[in-house]
Amino acid sequence: MALRYVFAVCCFLASLSFAQSFSERFDTAWRLVNERYWDLSRLTVDWSEVRTRYENEAASAVDEASFYAVLERMYDEIGDNHSVFVPPDKVLEIRSSYGDLPCLGVFGQTNLTSLGHVSYELLDNHIAYIELPDLASDFVASHVREAVQALETAGADAYILDIRGNPGGRLVSMMQIAGIFTTGFLWRTITNWTLPLPYPAIGSPETEDPLIILIDGGVNSAAEGLAGALQKRERATIIGETSAGNVEAVMPFCLRDGSQAWIATGVLAPIGGPTWEGVGVIPDVESSSESALKTALRYLKENP
Image (tube, rainbow, N blue to C red):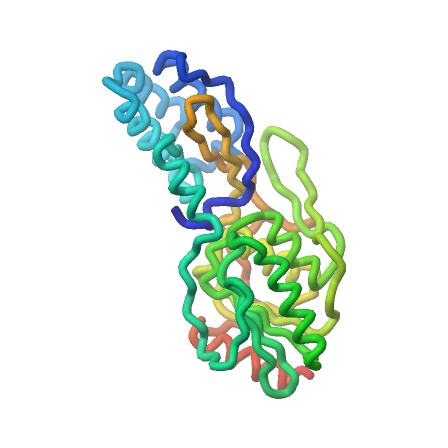
């Protein structure tokens, strides 16, 4: 399960009892999407028609495994690369993936210092380089803050934050990392079931030095929100390729039988601006992913 599918880790208890019939449990799973999905008009299917096609099959399932397979296929109809139905036997597997990500390759660096999955180095001309491969690993935000503190002590005058290929992760990590570089309310979530919810940068800034963020088409979810919000605030210059445009905020609903329904209940957007969903973060300076770092170094040389 790609980490870009996860923005929130809050669970809400739905009215589904293991003792209920398959029909009743199906109804709950279907209604969660019908009532909580951020914009049903964006779907390529009619959600009411989807119910008609799957309801009888779910009600007549021969066992739990068959029933959950029906719900998984029904949620696949949503087709947003975010919303999924997770049977009980897969929940533990997915939970264990948080903070247990494989290491991503270092983009040509040889003297990196590592803090968990965060790596950093002071390059020539007092340029600090930080590689941030995900926003889901344990302590990722505190590791970025420690890296910036060490780089400030070492004499950094400018920063390059490399999030190429970052699949996203936790919303709170996005907020905490933004707080290392700026303050204030930077985001809002757009839903059809509540007023927009504002989100602030968390923590005290460690530096006011120029900041460049490297992105590419592999940047998703909370990582897009981080880059896009700092760009919107004019705190960072974005270099690279347009990001994926997957910023649907997923909320897991925990059901009493141990299963979970992950539903995109909203989309992330900057304060005072349109969502990045379906559009992506557009770089200020376009560059291929492979040459983004060289482009950033050249940009800093030309714009001291």
